[in-house]
Image (cartoon, rainbow, N blue to C red):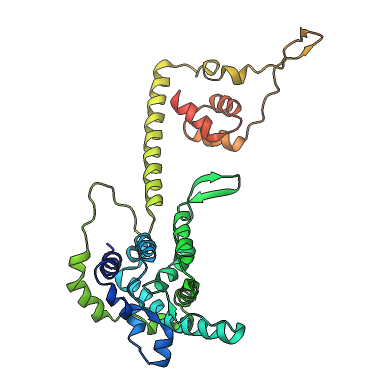
Length: 334
């Protein structure tokens, strides 16, 4: 359900490889030369120079980012996604000129005439909705407070693309500004720079059958707009709930058949038989049991709502140091 993303992934990458390997003499027609646009009125370079990457590293990084950003086409639809890309592509061309002129006027820094070519500015613009609307799901934690999330790899790819050239930061900043303007609907640019319905209908008839693919049937349907990590997490939580309910029913049947209490001495012998051992003057002093742990009545009530007795709930919470999840697992498994 992302034909536009697939076309942006395949067609510019194929053309970039074709120019780099077979037609290097034609690369001059796809150079993003702002001086030629400004002085020689070569307006066509604003189109050719901002579609195909001439650097294969930029092609690789931008392709990976487009693949990961296909979530927005699935969430908003192909027409709205195409309108966002078109609006940011047009706005970023204006911001490129403004940034270059501002650098020269304010700091006296003359930027090289050739900026990095390719469909880079809309890719950087997609980081705005990615940061604002995609939730963070922690995957791992390293070095204490530092954590790896489902968005870390995307930011690393963006940083790699941001540092791949000398003046690519101009294209990146213009893309981020244009993405912010379009996403926040500043000056109603989302209504002016949009794909007409008849154009979207035409491409849906002609190109969508070529680049679209059928939805896989081997997996259960999950609501659109979620990342793959969130979809997997939702499936895992659903399976965990089903497993927990089945274990709970099985345990209740076993307890009803046995008609007895749970043997907590067998489950928690090291926890329930804690002793303070004191060696003074080479002799072992008298063993004393640790004072009973205070148990939260709210957690006891939650366990009792699941069908456990108050005595079992108290024993489980004391033995698990008031960890509700651990106590629930022990009650279900035993």
